[in-house]
Amino acid sequence: MRHPRTIFASIGLAAVAAVGVVSGAAASGSPANGTPHGHAMSPATAGAAAATVRTTPAAVGGKTETILVDAHGLPLYYYRPDTATRSLVTGGLARLWPPLTSTVPTAAGLSGRLGLLNDAHGHQVTYNGHLLYTFVSDHADQVTGQGLQNFFVATPSLAPVAATPGAPAAPPGGAGY
Image (cartoon, rainbow, N blue to C red; front, side, top):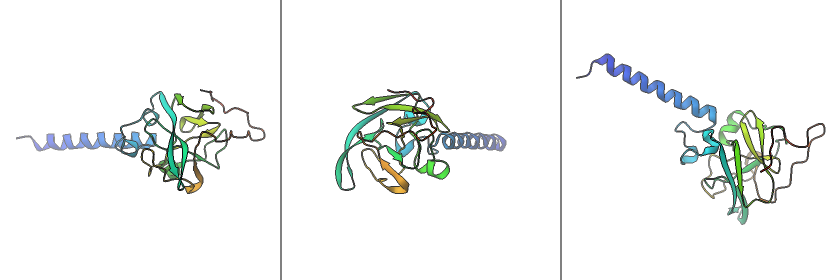
């Protein structure tokens, strides 16, 4: 039989480990289990190097459109109030709309420019200057966030962000891919 102190010490270590997972997940914008949207942890949310952005057809507002999705098929959105140089998605909004981050994003079948913006979220992926996000209620190839809270589905024809007066033409730390 185990000694009660050993049992309590084991429970305490398990609790500390669980808190560490929750804290790490909260810092990365991922759910506590480390699996965003019920999927295996993606490179974009795990802090790994690569994130693939590709196109796929999906129903958006009752019409089939070609949209941008991440490596797991999750629809990608842009936030209308963002600027070319700054994400305005923070706090609770960022928990609902996790930013797509990567140090080396790759494009598959895109006609526009994929890039990066070094910001509070890390290396956030951009498309034609628009910062990209997923939505926690979406599943692969299922769009449920169109028009919610000023977020809109990113499409290959998304017009480039116009530079704001006094702002650099290209996002700082941005790179074309």
